[in-house]
Image 1 (cartoon, rainbow over the protein chains, first blue to last red):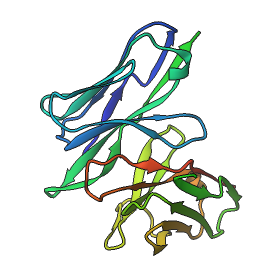
Image 2: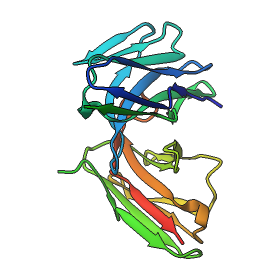
Image 3: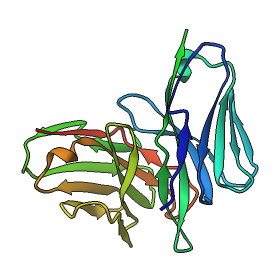
Image 4: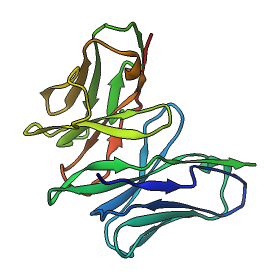
Length: 114
Length: 114
C-alpha cells in the first residue's frame, strides 16, 4: 500500500512569515500534485510535478519534487491571510507496474493570521 | 459554468435508507471518480471509471455502487445506509485515465446518516 505522509498536520502563523509543508513516502510516484481545499469546497489543483528534482513556482508558492520521486515540499513566502486553507499532496501511484489512481496525504491545515 | 457539479450539496437520511448522489462534468474528461473524505479530512478513492473499466477500491462495501449512464455522468448509489457512511463525498474527473493529469473536483456532498 502506498502512503503519503504530510507534515505538519496543523500550522498557524502570522502574516508575512515563511513556511514549508512536507510530503513524504517510502514509495516512488510517477508524479505528485498539490491541491488546496477551502471549507465547503472540493480540492483545487495548484501544481503537478513530474520529473525528479523539478521545481515549480506559482507566485509566492514554490513546489519541489524529490530527486527519487518519493517526496515533495511546498514553500510559501510571505504568507497572507488568503493562503489559509487545507493543503493536500497527492501522488499518482503504481499498481502492478501500471499507474493507478490519485492517493492523497492527510493534509496540512494552514491558518495565516493578519 | 460549473465544471464538475454534484447534487445534492447536503443529504440527511435515516439508517437503512437507500440514496443516490449525482455527478456531472462538462469538461469532456474521459475518467470520473468518487472519493470519500472523513471527519479528519482524509480523502480516499472509492471508484474510478472511464466507460471501459470500473476499478473498485476493495475496501468499499458492496452497498456502494457507481452508475454511469454516459461519459459525462457518474452517480453514486448507496444501499442500506449506516451511521459510518456519514462523510463528505466528492466526485472528480480527469482528462486521461492512468495519467499525470490533475483532477477537477466537485464541491462535495455532505451525507449525514442519523
